[in-house]
Length: 255
Image 1 (cartoon, rainbow, N blue to C red):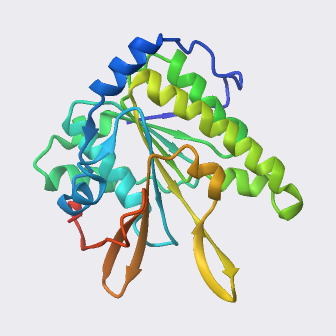
Image 2 (image 1 turned 60 degrees about the vertical axis):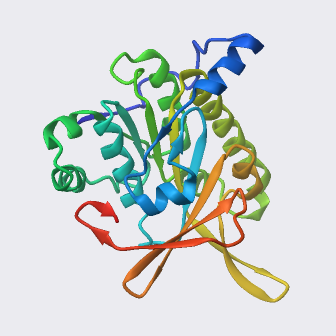
């Protein structure tokens, strides 16, 4: 595993290739999926995370978001893929990746070496990772991109209701660049996200941070929750009539 400090590059994403409409149709038809590593999650998502698209996993603290993200890296390694793990909260645990890989009978050292962990402590550094994925040969071939947590830096740098417009504008610009990169390079993108408590019609409920701005770029959105000793996942977008799947968290990850 390689830890890269992204704050040495210009904060621009250059070098994106362009394709014709016919080529775009061909790409769309050829895109595959990456298994989540869990039969339950695979069933919920229709076979796993889609290439060229963005999947969001959101929920409260201790609901398993980072576990799902690390598990995705393990499954990518099983395919021989490289992964980029953008860590905004210092939650990535290489020892957990090793445990998951070993419990699945994989070469843990090879799995660990397939992951490039990039720490992004602010919006500027988080954005510069996108340019590195184009320009840096060590990470440009990555097929999986994880951002854990995608909205954290935006929330800290643009706090309060008076800065909502600037926050959502910056987040939307960032997500647009990720979406373009994912499509052109056929990457699987997995974003973990926080929740915020809002009151609607007198009823308090948890919603994903970023709301409609994030929703415009997300292909699938998975809500995680913990109840007692079990974790639950439900597909929030596209709507699936409240279907929910329960899991246990084991050495293998979500089972």
